Length: 387
Image 1 (cartoon, rainbow, N blue to C red):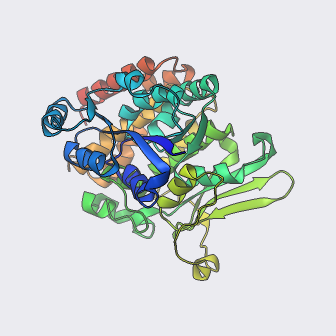
Image 2 (image 1 turned 120 degrees about the vertical axis):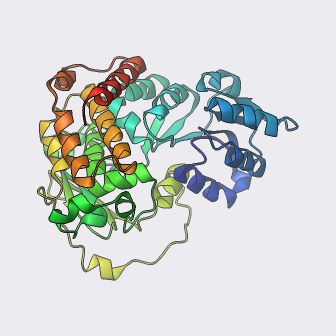
C-alpha cells in the first residue's frame, strides 16, 4: 500500500529534497497535498510531475495566477490552510512541515490531527510553540520527528533512553564563514560574505543566522523543548567540518556520537523511511575528518550572541517569540544593507534585553494568537525605534 504524504513548503530546499527521494520510489508514495507561498509555477510543475490533486498557495495574487494556469486540470487549488478537512478524509501516513518562519506555525499545528507522523523542519514553530505542538501530538497520538540535522541526531541517540539518563548534550556548529575571520573586520562584512556558508547550501536568512551563530541559540532552545533537557545540560562545540552533529553523554559513562555528511537529504530520507533502513548512496566514511575533528569551545568574543542563552529560563514562554522577531527584523535590515554586520549583532543583543520584552519570560503561550499578536507588537515596536 502506498504511503500517503503531504509536504508543507514543497518549493523550498527541504521539500525539494523530499521530492527527489520520492521520485526514485514513486510506486510506494502518493502525495496528497503540496503547498507554497508564492511560487505557483514550481508548485504546478511539481503537481503535474507527481500527480498531486490538492494544492495550497498562500499569496492571493499567486493563487489567482495558479487557478488560471490550472483551470483545465482536475487539481483542487486552495488559498489558505483552513481547508484541511476537505483534503484529508482520514489520517495520512506522513507530513513534512518545512514552511519558513512563523508563517509555518498555523499550518503545522493544524495538520497534526490529520497525520500519523509529522516531520518538522520549521524551527520557529518548535521554538515559539512547542507546548502547543506537543499538546496536539499527544492528543492526536501523532508521532514526531525533528528534521534539523542536530536534532535528528539527538533524536536517534536518545532512542530507548529517558531524558533523565542524560548528563550532557553537545550540539556542534561549523562556525560559519567567519570562524577564522578577524573580529576587527566584522564591520566590513557584506551580506554576500555572510551568505557563503562553507558546508551547507541554505537560504539567505538562515545563512546569516549561521554566520552569527544565532542558529545555534535557536537549536539549543529547540533541543531543550523537544527533549525536555534543561539549558545547563546543553552545550555548543565548534566543529568546522559539519560531520559530527551531536554528542550525548549519559550518566552511566557512555558517550554516543552521530556523524553523517553535511547533507539534509540524510535526516529527511531517514524520517520518511523510518525503521526501514533503505540504502542511500552517499560517500564513504571520511577518515581524514574523523582523525581531525577540531572540536573546540565557542569564542564568545567573536560570537557574543551565544550569551543570549545565559538569560533564558527552562520554562517555555513568549520570550522565545521576542527573540525570533527581533532577530528576523535585524537580519532583514542587514540583508537590505541598512545596517552593517557588527551593528546586526549588537542590536539583536541590545533590543532583546528591553525591559518591556523581558516580562514575556513569565508568560506562557496559550494559543497561536498569543504568538502572532506578540510578533506583530514587537515588529511594530522595532519599526518605531530610531535604529
